[in-house]
Each structure stands twice: as C-alpha cells, then as structure tokens.
Length: 88
Image (tube, rainbow, N blue to C red; front, side):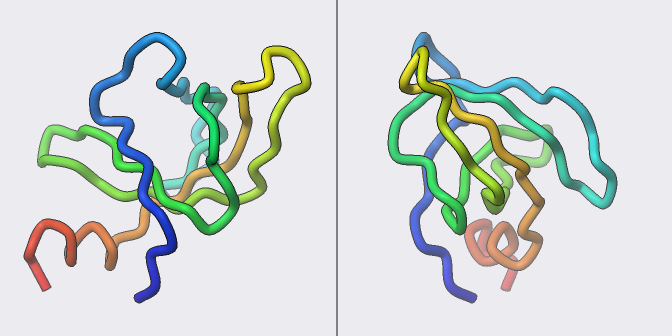
C-alpha cells in the first residue's frame, strides 16, 4: 500500500471542507471541495460513524475562481483505512 499524502477533512472549517455532489457507486463519490494541494493519488481523511476513513482522490481539478476550489472523484481505500485504524 502506498499512500502519497493525506489531507485531514475530519473537522470541516471555512476554506477547508468538501461537499458530496453525488454517489457514483462502490463507495465512490463526486465531490467539490476547498483547500490547496489536493492532487490525484492523494487521500482525504473523512469522519465517519466508525471513525475516520481514507478516500483516494482521482480526477482532481481546480477551478479558476475561487482558486482553492476543486472537484474530484473520491474512492474509499479500504486497505489504507484498515492500516490507519490498526486493523491490519
């Protein structure tokens, strides 16, 4: 397992949050978010009822205005989540 970089989105705040636009199936979602440095292959940590989960970022692109706004597909990374939780 190779986790490049993890961005913590467990505590949303102004300028550092995301919104799920739609569910794509198989634990993947089309999202829109705010914050710099998100790239394909990175992970975002999301708060869930069971604790935090890691989602892999795919097809990320930034808007021109506002410059910190991005859109992407995020996919649950089960293996990375289990490793982070100490379940593996």
